[in-house]
Amino acid sequence: MGTKTETSERTIEIHKDDMDHIKTILGQYTINLHESIFSISHHAVEKTFKRALRHLNISETKTLHSLRHTHCSYLLANDVSIYYISQRLGHKNISITTSVYSHLLKDHYQEDNDKTLILLGGM
Image (tube, rainbow, N blue to C red; front, side, top):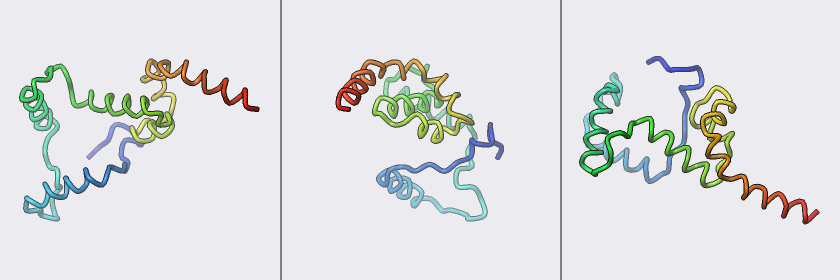
């Protein structure tokens, strides 16, 4: 399977509870080790995602890609470093991440300014 960039293919960690849930779901299926576990098309995933949105009464203007943006926004809002996020998202370099999410970084400006003044005042 081809990827968008050389940094697209990566391994990321997920919470143990999420992995346990995935293992439970996969345990319900017969797995042929000579085939891909997730041999479904992007179109099929999008269709299922849209169906879930309708079921949950969430606007269908949301896309799978919007989950990526939400993930990044959540991490930034909780003070996860932009470097780590860039690596997790598989961006080729950190400047891509900062350009796409700079509006969220600006939200922390005053908070960072206050922290800086406290740090410098304690010198």
